Length: 246
Image (cartoon, rainbow, N blue to C red; front, side, top):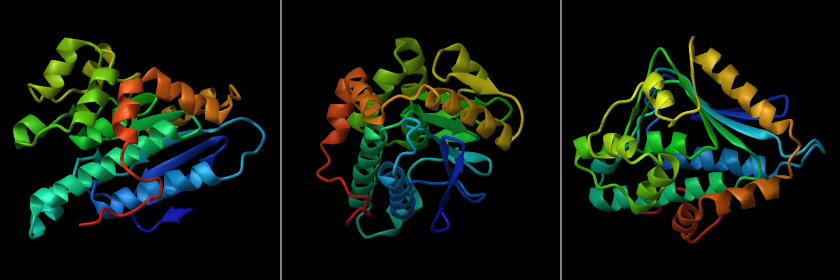
């Protein structure tokens, strides 16, 4: 299944792989938000095969996993602040979709993950990162952009070490896979090319899917594991995938 020319979905055993396609930066704007949310919604609506919840892997082609918000799109309109607010609302909705998804989720960080792209990766249950290329980078302090409250909560929940969180948010440190793994921010650093990272993430996801867990139970446990984060992202006023309205 393909979602326009922005992402594609394939099935590998019990694992559904959503891939952000192309060699670009995979910046999060209205079209990409809509494509990812549509793909996630399709997985949620798909009938089960009786073997448990399955699992999701989110990956990307090219040197970038996701380079954050599409600021060029925001600045091209008559009201950039409104466009940035719209992107934040769409991102909050996407995070709510992932937290409520009735299956385990794994991010295959195949390249650079910056700003909201870094937060998107960390929103998954597990994170596998390419060792030879790419970094985690919360770029807001360097870009002069305020961090949304729900993103701050995500970082508090997913990066519990205060010093590591300071280095990411307050210093804008670009963390390699080796450092992020050592500091407990990602689960594994994988040598090799993009496909090697995806294969490793699929293996992690397949192991989780093999547990045969009930999907709705997985989603409810995720919500109570990170209750403050769920509370912040769930209050966005709608369930259906949609393009941000301006």
